[in-house]
Image (tube, rainbow over all chains, first blue to last red; front, side, top):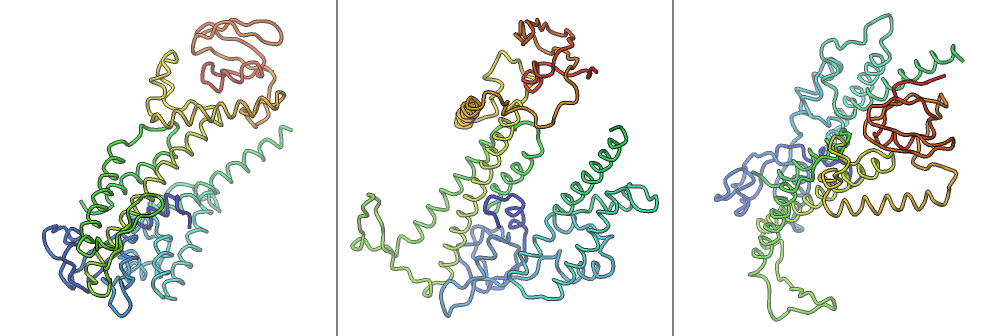
Amino acid sequence: MSYYSLPQIQTDAQKVPCTTLLPLPHLGHLSGNPAQTLEKNTSLSLPLWLAEMLLIAPAPNTPAAITMDLPPPLQHRVVNALKANPVTLDLRAQAPHFYALGARMLELFEDEDLVEVLLETFRTRAVEIADRASGGVGGRAAGDEGGFLLGLEDGEKRLWEASREGSASVGKWLAGLGKG
Amino acid sequence: MSLGDTSQKLIESAARISSLPTLPPYATTLVRAITRESRDLERDIQSLLSPYRSQSSQSQTPGGDTQFKSSFNPADDPALATTLMVNHVTLRRNKRCLLAYHRTRIAHLEKSLWSGLPLTQSSSAPSNPSSQESNLTPSESLLASSLSSLYSQLGAQYPDIDLLGSITPPREVYVEIRVLREVGEVQTEYGSLVLGKNSVHFVRLSDVEGLIRGGVVEVVGEGG
């Protein structure tokens, strides 16, 4: 966890759904009404960096100011889609830093099932990425069927670039071997 | 406009920097907006806490700062405690975004200097150094010039090695180059060479490496 890492800063900026547990007189601006009290049981979405700290109770024996839910990219609908077929889902549309968001949320929530789904998703998609980057096995073109490459999240995109550069370099080296 | 939106924009522009060949202009407006937001937050914190501040317990620290002892107890007013928390966390967030933005710029600057690339758009006239560095803030220009003098000092200790040179071994000893900008006479190991604009020369690569890096000449072909 690096303080200066831009991807991590961007991960922390992703919004999570929260519900207030206290009336908060000075914080109306969080829900877009600066003049009004933020009432108890208001639903609002807050960036992760803020929500995370508000989960901590301000003093012993007092409730925390908010409760937090899993953000939409990690809710049942998406998780079920991932269970069904990890490759076809557009992860980028869910969250640009999908796995990082998952990792951050799982620091706060306990959900073994989600861990398993995320791991399996990454495994399956990583193989698919490597396969496409090397030009595909069995003569399959390296083209982008189904917009898979456009749906890669940030880390996957780096993985894709690394694999493609890797196979291109090996190709270049092999071609150079013949010439001596 | 909710809290931290401005710093979010700054981070997005920082994320773009690494993919650009040259450093974009400094985001003065965004940085100012963020510092203004941070000052407002600080003022809010002070005014929210002022009722709890007792003048009598005011003490002077050795540094000269006036420290206020606050009688505020978070358990008495969780709502106020939460507001203070929101302001504080937003301040910290703004600080992190500002630091990360500047660090990204500095990293880009260092990389360009080390690889001998032009710092900003090289399309501007070489005779006008002020327009070349217009994308840098004064302190960044200062950093750039101190760094390059540091690099040349380091290079002077190893006269046999071109520290800023390419680490890929050359394939050919001679190259064909085209001169993009008027250079004039250049002294080489085997005599002098007059590099007029748009002229093409067949020269030893080692004689013109610096000019190639500086974008003054371009390689048009490798000779055998």
